[in-house]
Image (cartoon, rainbow, N blue to C red; front, side):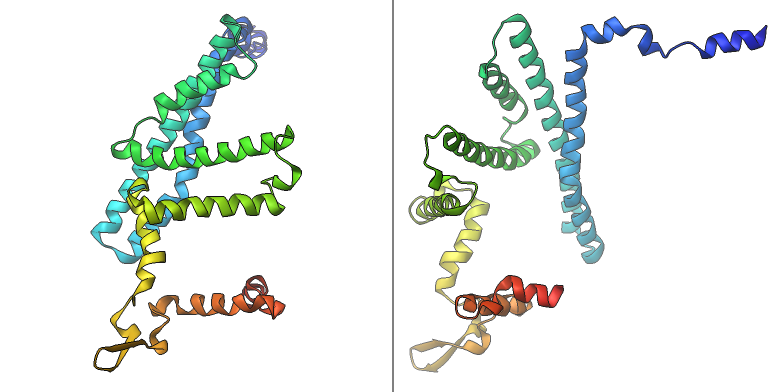
Length: 267
């Protein structure tokens, strides 16, 4: 009867269950494709807040520059997802081949597959891809170096006092990092990225002279002295500058620590 036929049909398992051997034979391919998907999703998640921020600015200011910025960060979102997904696909595929067919493991396969994936997915250094890749490679390089220092500590190559995860070890890491950057800033500025040097110039060179005409006062022929009333320029950042200045008294007045003041004001 039709009722019996419907019962038999409803008892059929899904199509994927009918071919379990295919899924098992190709589980590594499926895993790599899932990695591709997850990489695309992860890249989009990382960039989405920047898209929202740019869209908010575009709605507030309503000018062509902000609209171009929105378009640019949307393109970055897609590019980031593509590059990250492609890397995972290449990495997992090569690792599978090396482990299953070449008998290469123990970490060597990770170096080979990682290099091939990074060279392929993140190696572009021009146009949109380059703008995305430069940020990612710098971040990963720094993370990798710190990770190697942690491993060195775990293997007792470095003493416990130089554990970079905290304490004196982290202070030494911070000191070395800033010393390196300032040495390059002072003596090899062309070795640093121009956008980064713009910030460094503002911090260390622009502070040698007033940042606005109103910050100085002429008291006589050839005599120029700072006008403290205009020191906090630009004025839109004056409240932040004042609060941070006050927090520097923390050593003598602990209640004036930055954390205490912000907790009092913001809760």
